[in-house]
Image 1 (cartoon, rainbow, N blue to C red):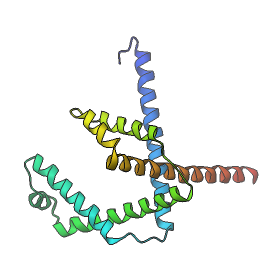
Image 2 (spheres, helix red, strand yellow):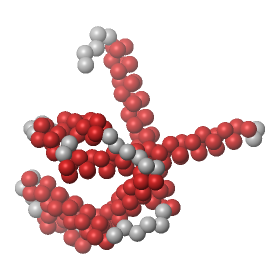
Image 3 (tube, rainbow, N blue to C red):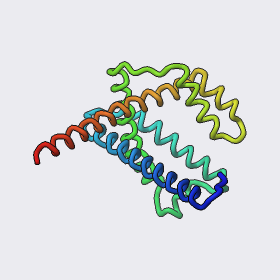
Image 4 (tube, one colour):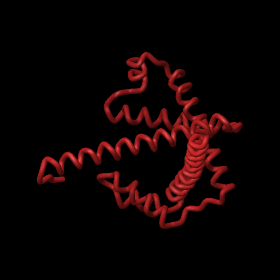
Length: 183
C-alpha cells in the first residue's frame, strides 16, 4: 500500500509484526495440541497408509527435482543420504501424520462435526486463488466428487483440531485462575 506519512508506515509495520507474532503463537499452540494428541493416543496406523504417503512424497520430490533438471539420486548424494534413509524419514513423518489424521477423524465423528457445502466452496475458492493459470479448473475439481471429499475431510480435521485447541485454552485459563487464588 501507499503511505502518506512515516507514522502510517510505522503503524503498518507494527501491525504486520504483531499479526505475524500472533500467527506464530497460534501455530505453536496448534503444534503443541497435535503433539499432545499423538503422544497420548494409542492408535496404530495401517502400514498401507504409511507406505502410500511415503511413495506419494517420493514421487512428488522426484517430480519437483525433474522440473529443475535434477534427479533424485544426485539430490540424495549431495545431501549425503540414501534412498533408504529418505524412506525412513518419510515413514516416521507419515506415521505421525497418520496418527494425527486418524485421531482427528475420530474426534470429528464423536463430536458429530459437519462441513456444509458453502464451507467447501469457500475453501475451494481459497485454494484455486493460489494458482496463476488454471483457477477455474482447480475450483471445479475441488467442488466436485474427490476434490470436494478431500476438502471436506481437511475441514473436518481442522474443526476437530480447533476443538482440541479450545480445550487446551480452557485448561490454561482454569490453571491461571487457580494460581491467582493461591496468593
